[in-house]
Length: 193
Image 1: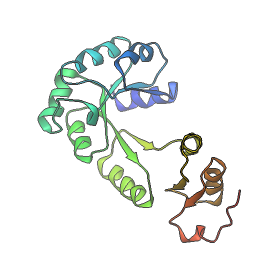
Image 2: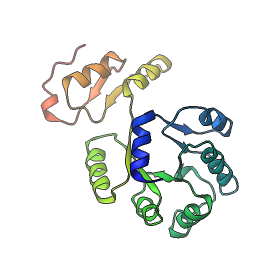
Image 3: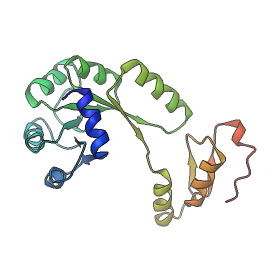
Image 4: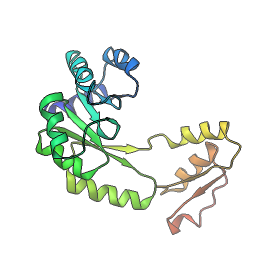
């Protein structure tokens, strides 16, 4: 699959299934998806999973850090590219992005944006590695704040990537007891919801 074809599928379906249990392979296969990311399997079963999804016409990406028995080096990536034959990989590791690109695989670089330092290093990493797509996590922090607030008897402080008063208020409205901001300009804001 080419990068252009992948981007077209992203625009068309706007949903990627992250499959974390083998029992969900059939459900993913019957959905209208841009792609599937397999976060399951090992060297003994992954080719079968990839072949199944491709037989359904769904592009397949492997989340390498979740694959057992496959080394994260040049030979491991070459094995995946030439024997398992996924469309691409998902990884947080810069070195794996580079190796996969050399083998002709599409790449999705996963970034965990937990604070301003992670944002800065993530941007730099993407600029250097030029992956085909970037997955930014977390996507729905307010929803998780609500969920944790319902379950925990512990004060929740929401922090990371806050840039505006509105973002701070959204976190507070979702159940956070407080927000933690690194930007001095936000320290002067009145944030009682």
